[in-house]
Image 1: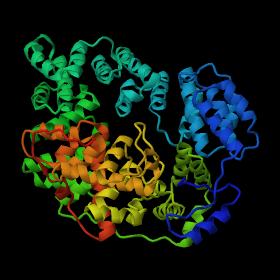
Image 2: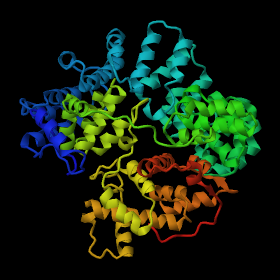
Image 3: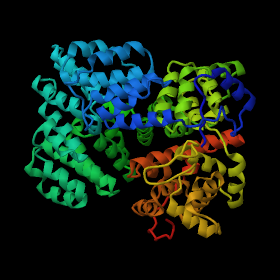
Image 4: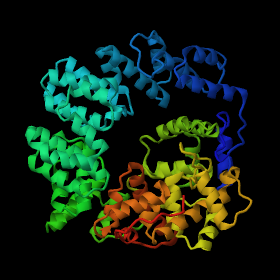
Length: 635
């Protein structure tokens, strides 16, 4: 096991061990052995996830002396607040237990989690007086349903409905997170005059686009274009042709909404008619009635068609909350301005994101003529690192990691990071490196704002193993590290929901194929967890897809995530040579699109960190030309 824990009773021992061990990937704090109590704790956790009240009561009683008494109490109380389907219970009798917990563990990560749960119960009860007392204490404030209950409370207390609706529009972006609270808020806003029926129908349509039919009707009632939405999802090309003939039967508002939906699903099929559909929508207006997905795919359709006027109009018409959540739209707006010859305004747009160390921050810097080099390194002292080692959240987090309870480990670790200075963050990242918690190294160093250490943000563990493998097959080491950072964050025992495992997240069938190709005759799938085996098979497969896809890092990165056949199909659907950044932004799969951008942005900084080389991200992305897809034997 990679992650071995620090016992709560021995923080000073941990500091000394980490100090002596230094930065070696082999450093360990203490050997953790699972006890019967730990196994019961894990069983309690699983029962709490199912909201099994009887089982959690029984197990919690047997863990009365467990060192993490707050978690035992939380796992005992939480199932009393929710039913078996995960919905908050208004009739819970656990009020005094919750308040006692919040008072006893005030200021902890778990108390904030309990407050989140409690706010959902209070919102379900419509107990706005108590809700309003507790909500300001909810530090993370990261629950969409809680935000919607807060706006319900404001409405119930007579706050101006129009003002509440303005706030709601910054929250109601993704129907997957609406839950009961947001589904109640929208009709209430309509009834109070703060939101128009058309806006409510638009939100319902956004739910319908994602397959939430029942939610759709609750939000906006019957939608005049519901059949068009359904048809566009299933057969967008056919729907485009048919609606071209029948559009005049609908009001201009419904025509515009329909063209937006049709455009979205055409764009997701990479069909060039998407540009035409969105141009028809743009001519009619009603941009505010497009779903978040339709707004974003409107930009992508314009990019794919090299229709810079549509790109500019689409971004200008975005909900401000949608536009601001992703630096992509700031970058592409600058590019659209540049295409119009508005160079000074374009420069202003690029400057807005040029200090961000992400894919679009890098591209923006290149537009401004600035190199993508790692910033100057800020060093931290051993005393700072020793101080980090004594922090309670890190100590608790490490033990959870040792028990393979990553969710709880991350909660404790991340809570400790709140309000830290850059130097404190770097000290914590260095400590994580010394105890071989490499995902925490990345996560922690990634948070710095002014002072940085990109050796921590882009670490290179397992280099002794990976370098000779990459050298033997002439695989770019910076790219390989960029991919591993994205795939597993260097968690050796990482596994995905589809069965991929290890540092390079290799699928078992892929591993068997590669092993056979490279002559690894002794390979069996139980060896995929071995570090050297995983790196060997993953690196060779990455090189195979690179060769299969004509040396394009964009296509090969996409293929590693989504399969070579999809990469080839997406390339085949191009109508002309297209810059790699546009190809990456218009990948139809959300996960793969994000993956490709992150891998290639990572590779740029890995090159700088490892070799001191400055390489252009645009050059890495290259230009991708259409090519007929030919079947590959690669899995």
